[in-house]
Amino acid sequence: MRFTGLNRQIILSMCVLMVCSILIIWIGSWIFFAVAFKIDPGMLSEPDDWSPSTVEWLWIFAITIFGLGLAAFFAIKLASRILKPINSVMDSVRRVAHGDLSARAFAGDRTLGETAMLVDDFNSMAERLQRAAKESETWNAAIAHELRTPVTILRGTLQGVVDGVFKPEEVPFSSLLSQVEDLGRLIEDLRTLSLADSGHMQLRMAWTDLTLEIEEVGRLLAQEMEAAGFTLQLHLSDHPVCCDAARIRQIVLALLDNARRYARPGLLRVRTRAQAGQYCLSVEDAGPGIAEELAPHVFEAFRRGDSDGGDQHAGSGLGLAVVEAIARAHGGSAACTRGKAGGSVFTVKWPVEHGAPPAAG
Image (cartoon, rainbow, N blue to C red; front, top):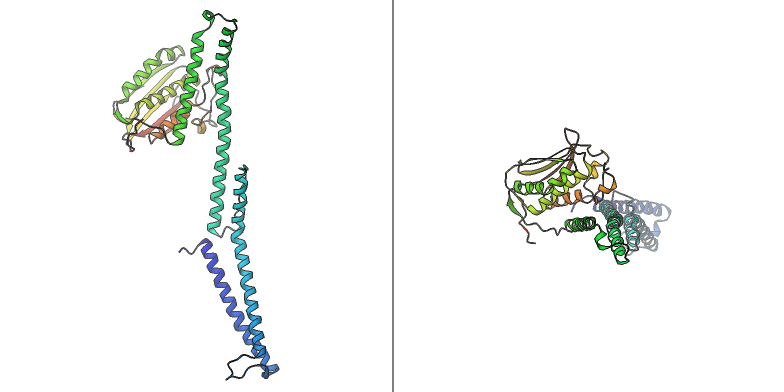
C-alpha cells in the first residue's frame, strides 16, 4: 500500500489520535492520583484492593468520555476533509445528469491525493462532454448551412418546372448536376469523418505503387486545374507502400481541390517519397499560404481560409478534415507548413508497412 494521499492522511490521523490519547491518559492519571493522594488518600483504593473506588470509577468514566470526544473530533475533521470533494462531485454529477454540462467539482484540500484525482477526472470528463455538445451544435448548424444552398437551388428550379415558370429545355441541367455532385461529396465527406471518429473506418490494405494512382488523379483533374490556372508537377517515387489506394486517392483529390479553391494560380507540386520507414505524400502550392492564426486549425472540420474567388468557390470545409482522418486511420498524420516559395505544403505521412491487419469492407 502506498503511503501517499488519502492513505497517508488516514494513517497520520490515527497515529496522532493514538499518541494524544496515550499522553492524555498518562498525564491525566498522574495528575489525578497526585492531587487525590494530597487531598485525601482515603478516596483511593488500597494497593491490595482490585476494585476501584468510587472516585476512581468517576475518573475512568470521565477519561473515557473525553477520549471518545477526542476521537469523534478527529473523525469528524477527517471525514469532512474526505467528504467535501466527494459531495462536490456528487452534486456536480447530479447537475450534469439534469443537463447542466457547465457543472464542476471542487477538490478543496488537495493533500488528499485520491479525492483530488477523482475531482480532476470528473472535471475533465465534464469538460469533454461540454465540448462535445458544443461541437455537435456547431456541426449541426454547419451541416444545415452547407445543405441549404444546393437544396434550395434544386427545389427552386424543380418547382419552377412544375409551376410552368421554366420549360424543361430551359433548365440548366449542368448546373443542377454540379449541385448534386456537391451534395454527394458533402455526404461522402461526412460519412468518412463519422466512420473515422467512431473508429469504424474500414481499410482495404494492400501493397501499392501509388505512382499510377496519383497520375490517374492528375489526368482526371488536368482540364479542370488548367482552366483554373494551375499546372501540376509530379515528383513520384515508385517505392511500394501498404495502404488503401482508394482512400489515398481521396486524399490527393481533397488536397488538389483545396489548392484549386484557395491557392494562387500557378505551379502545384505533388511529391511522394519513402523515408525512415514513413511514406510521405505532399502537395505544395504557390501561395499565398495559410495565415498563422489559422494554421493550427486547418484540419478541423468546417474551417475555411480566405478564397480569392469568393464564396462561390469555397468548399464545405470538410476536405482537410477528411485528409487528416484518413491519415490517422493509416496510423499516420497530416501537417501543414509554409514552403520555401511562400505557399502552403500539406504533408501526409504513414508507415510504409502498416501495422494493423487489413480490414474487410
